[in-house]
Length: 442
Image 1 (cartoon, rainbow, N blue to C red):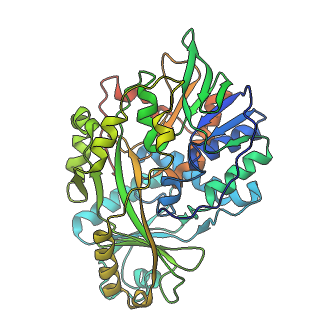
Image 2: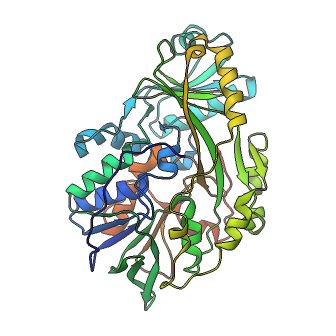
Image 3: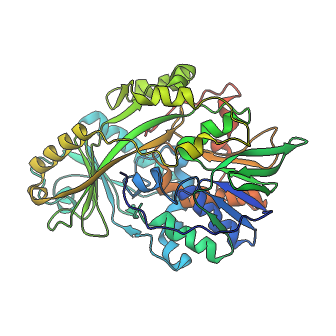
């Protein structure tokens, strides 16, 4: 079972029409609904399961600028600004706090990489520093084997994945948005190359704008529209502890583990260097697209052939809109965690920090990251399908960058000046021969 998310009740009536229908109520879909509803648009947010049910509630909760891909610099800078004012904006509790995040540097090559990153980030208005010795010990007290140096971004923070999307969704509802949970969008209807309706399992909603923010499901949804988006799933595992005293306040990424303090006083802990990539039919289709990413992260990405291959093979065909869709057959992707990797990380963490010796694990879970070949999201209209906006492929960065991405979606739909230049997020980069490569990874 995944983590328990603050529940958001569904509205009962299916609207006959809306200005915008959003597919997926994760952090991207809910923030887009918030900003669109603030601008007076009639928004319907459709979720096949429950709000924040997949990766938006299963991630680490980091809201970070540190180690971001330079193509994301402007968007994450704006996203952190939005996070800082989010609770006041929505009149709710996302759990956001500025805590700082530390990335260990254990060899000279990593130190030099961080120096270059700090210089590049500074040009985008992002402040970070390379620390060591007493400065590092102050942030990571009790570390028995501290790294020689570390990258520190003091303005980074965290929010609570099990409550943030829900709080934002409720604010959008108060602004007039309609929330439909357990209501899958099966597909869209078009006329003259433009969207004219979204077809849900409860009925049809007339609309001229649809946002696909379906996370790991987005590729499947877009394929039915003839959009061959290169996207694969990466399984990431996490566990949380009961409240714990004496451990660091700042978050840490290390090659052996990663952790951050939760608002409830416990810690979210993961293996900082291992994620699992299920081998599925699309793995072969997109092998060359993802090869640079696999080469760059060969030590941390573990390829596995498991039940996902058959599942995606069986659900891959196009289903008529009057039939039960794959989204209704699987309301929530809830993969089993890779417990061996979590146990390994926990043992190493306890050897490094004595305070974690008293930590009591409470729950572990896993989720599927929606990855693109360059590990940069798609936030973009689609040529040939007027009114379709895609917001997906956040490659493990979506929670922190969510408010900025949702704002950019709202800008695109309303024709407002975009919060950042969207060029690097265009979907066409995968089809125009650009073959973009990853710079920072997952």
